[in-house]
Length: 193
Image 1: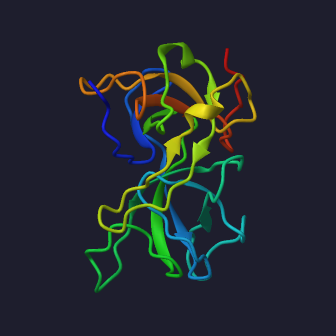
Image 2 (image 1 turned 180 degrees about the horizontal axis):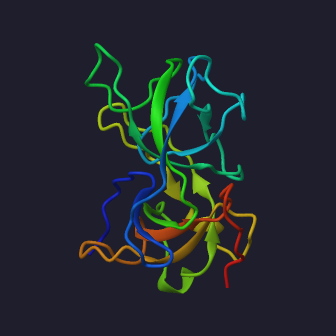
């Protein structure tokens, strides 16, 4: 059976130690000066005003990851709606909005691979993320794991820990794999085996 090409970014599914998926979800602010939209499943990092609070409230600023290789703060798992625009399900570009981020370095995520895909022998290897533009219709990220980059290299974005056990998933093109964020701000990079 061929896998469908339906990217969704990073979807939290479990934890590294097998405990309940509680996540460490934290509210952050994305200022209107940030011209890049953020979608559910996108990687985020500390904003350009890192360490500074949004004026008048207690929330730190974050920004989306534009390319692989950045230190990651976590994954956007929710967006606070704008008053008067309750149908917006992503953080609009150039719009001051609050988002919710899973900042737990032990979260395991499901993510789709690209057309190169992944094989069972790729489990425990590292890979880079190909950052997508996201869908303004679904509000979901379109980021995927690059099958070309699978290697034992601690400088790569993720560590593949397995395959998503969904019955419609198989090794090959557009396979869905389980990954740990390897360049997490609160975690330790691991060289794949």
